[in-house]
Structures are given as structure tokens and as C-alpha cells.
Length: 59
Image 1 (cartoon, helix red, strand yellow):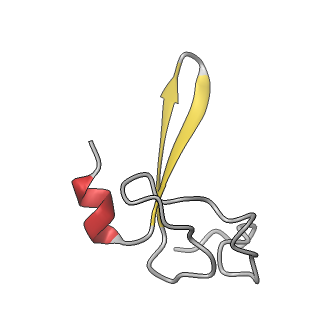
Image 2 (cartoon, helix red, strand yellow):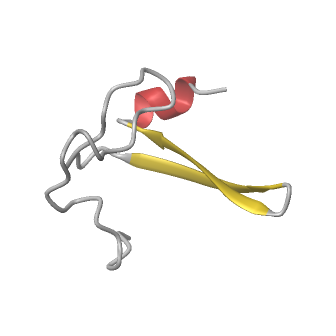
């Protein structure tokens, strides 16, 4: 399910887009965009990925 408050499918400029944690490519308006979130030191951390393949390669 896509979060209805998320702007990840909106018209995001590449300069403002997150970068893939694996390959470093900007992720702007990609339907294959994946995000992992976790708690570390009492704060929320995120890692963005351009597709499932990059997500699986991430360590």
C-alpha cells in the first residue's frame, strides 16, 4: 500500500530526490522505489532504493 501522505509519486525534482543507498542513483518519480525504515539510537532511520534488486544487495 502506498502511503497517501507520501509524495514519492509526485513530481519530485532529481535535485531534491533521495539517492539509492546501493547505487547512488537519484530516485525521482520511480514506481520501483523501495524504502526500509528502522529505529537506531531512539531515532527513525531510512534507506531508499531505486528497485528491489538494489534493496536486496544492500547490507
